[in-house]
Length: 546
Image 1 (cartoon, rainbow, N blue to C red):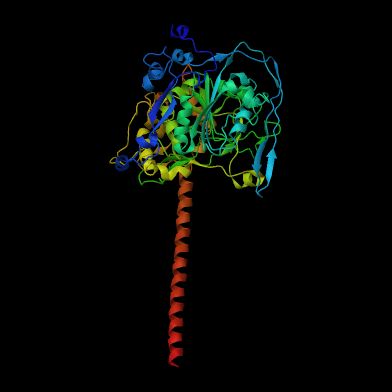
Image 2 (cartoon, rainbow, N blue to C red):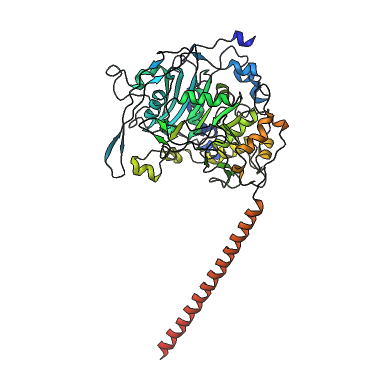
């Protein structure tokens, strides 16, 4: 009945087409330590942002409708209401879009130009298309416009895509990510002109930036009811037909609660920018994580994901289940972004953003998968990239002095919300904990038990990656709900244990023994040096006497 009554607004909807905005307290102001709050030395105290998507049909609001902020798992009927569609535009043969060149400075300081070519698209004729919203957070990134071009030029059905860019700029020197190189009147064929109605830009002074969490939080506010929601970075390359591939991968999981996510492989050795094709079947799996000592304060350690192993898929029939969620690439139904938005109150957090979204998503009932193959690729600022031609990209850490003291408070909140804070005497700011907290469809303890995470000891069961793949599929897929609303972890009894514990202990004992031997050798050498110095001193004294 509700499904028949709710009629989504026509696609696309822009954040700039109405007055659905609000003024909120800047997160750094909210998360200041008590002493700093009295001093009041934060430069910006408020910021104007789009309101979250919340059509008046949903009473009292859309998140109450979808399981009351995670208190329960939403129903298939409730989930099916979320998601707009649009008509196909342009026919079965779509001409290639003209991609602009990218200027950069090579390792020797020479000005160079990188060119790209798109290809014409042969398309299946369909009555309607499921829409896709892509949120991109950019911090003074010169590669952002090209990323947006790649989104549309490489898509089979670009008319179904809407991009929301949170563009953090030095307004005196940087160029808006959505601004074409030439005036659209002079060259309307430019991608940023041709698809301008599908591009939303939220422009923000870079000095307001307090890290990726707040920028991506604003990105989630820019969602406007699309069928799928996707998150990625501002320096990416997309393969030809990426939209069709991703939807196919997602549907093959046969799970409404599936979220495709992974760290994205480098452009180097994985992608041909000239053809727009991938040249590798390997893609990372999200399975390597460990507790990392906190930069700001002791006893605030949380899980952080490390270098993830790249593997070829075991089963091309469906994506691969994995324990963790990644910020660089995430693709799922629109209700994922509605139910698990980025926390508004985690300024100056970089390491730790992924585990908080991942665990919150798990407790809302979502399951994470690596896609069968890579569909987007990442420009990393490593030495090889610099040799191939790159230039320095600014980072939000340049604002650290403006927001001194908020990082530790944010980390305490992060750990407190996902029940990873072991210091019981450490207070944390719980503002809007219901809105940005954990759900009730599953418990955090079930996550920790299943994947070998020991919170009190701050230890993990090693070699979790050996479980991810066929073994994890065999353990969990049989517990998929028949209505396709995710894996029923109430029936999961499996608890991962280190399969190489004895070998690890032998290696540790051997390393300790070697360290002891080296230490003894060093002590012996130091003692010999001291004795030699004493002997030389005696000789010097005797020489002086003589």
